[in-house]
Length: 319
Image 1 (spheres, rainbow, N blue to C red):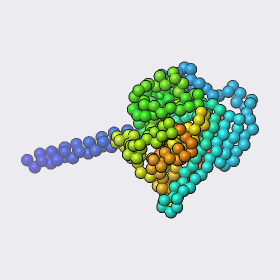
Image 2: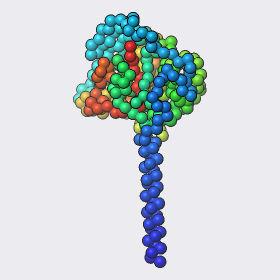
Image 3: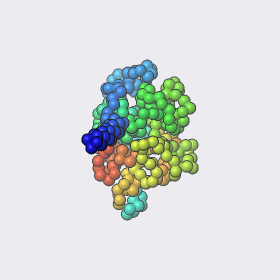
Image 4: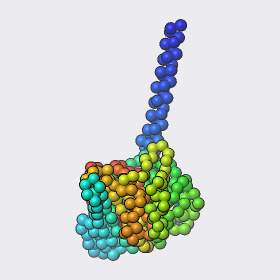
């Protein structure tokens, strides 16, 4: 009978090990292993769900009417683009907060662009914000909504539909220079495209709407499924707001670094946008992802370590 007990014990051990290995594989497959759905993304060429009338902001001869550019480490100005970045520090000691405000005015809303890590669309494909920016000739860039961590949301980039799985409150950029906070579950990607949407972001929460801060911002959670971290507390943050047509503000807050920047809560973050004169503002991916790039350098100090974390996508501006 003893050999039978040993065999039974071996079978149980084998089954437990097999289950653990399966769980580890499923976790790695969900959060680590790259899944490329579209290789070598070209946003001006249609894929299965693309709009054949996608707008392009590329002139046939981009150098023919190029204006003189005036720039320094914190400013950039041309006939069709103005970017001004300001570093702000408040508080002292462990209560110090450091953040960077980019005031952006563009001639055409299509100058607000998006790019994917490695120029590929899919899940778990990541690259540093600065590397994606350099590859796309960006003057300015910040991390996006980390679409590759999720499999839902409405994702339209440069007039092309990549995902149409309504799930949360999103942000839409229109070709007329405005933005709109909207409920993804009440529309569709194609309807948004038909209305003139150029880009969408699916993260949140809403920080400002019609100049009002949501009353539940201090307790709100956007996604509570496995793998998502709480967005509450003092955190590094990236977000975008609008002052008027073609006039945007992007704020990147550093955090989790004592004596340099502790980060901010969502209500505090919303107040920053409101005080800057924004009417609407929206929270993007934050934490270690929060990165601002300008003229060949990372402006902020991610987590106080000067080390970027790979992301799946960026928002950027190029001439």
